[in-house]
Image 1 (cartoon, rainbow, N blue to C red):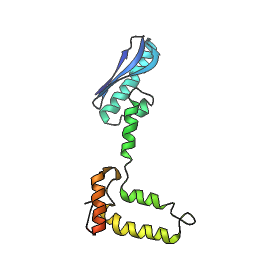
Image 2 (image 1 turned 90 degrees about the vertical axis):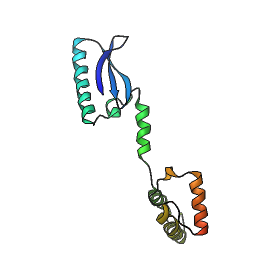
Image 3 (image 1 turned 120 degrees about the vertical axis):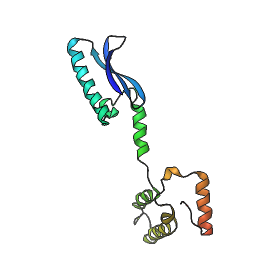
Image 4 (image 1 turned 90 degrees about the horizontal axis):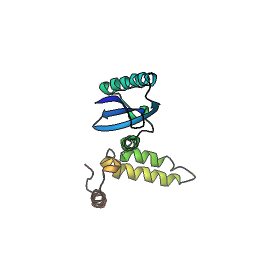
Length: 147
């Protein structure tokens, strides 16, 4: 894991990153002059310290970097929701006059009785079609599912 300063084929300084199993060139837009080299090498040293400490944030340092798209998709993967979290979010707009109070009560009651106790802590994206079919069959038969 490291960050080195290199000169690209056009004479501009660039960071050569070896981090998290990946390799990347990140341009600085600065020509290779003694003053610019000192500035970029100082930044490279800070990046090296962050990498060693485990606090390096690629998107913070290079928001438009060559590999930014890889880290943006990873962040969205972290935002997983459980069935319970999705239900609570879904119920927020089940209020009068959008939905009758009795309908909202039924949604809440049935979902708590039949779904949340079975699958409330399961992540939505972990369900397969087969598991959903099995859950449906178990709900119809009155058996336990999701565990």
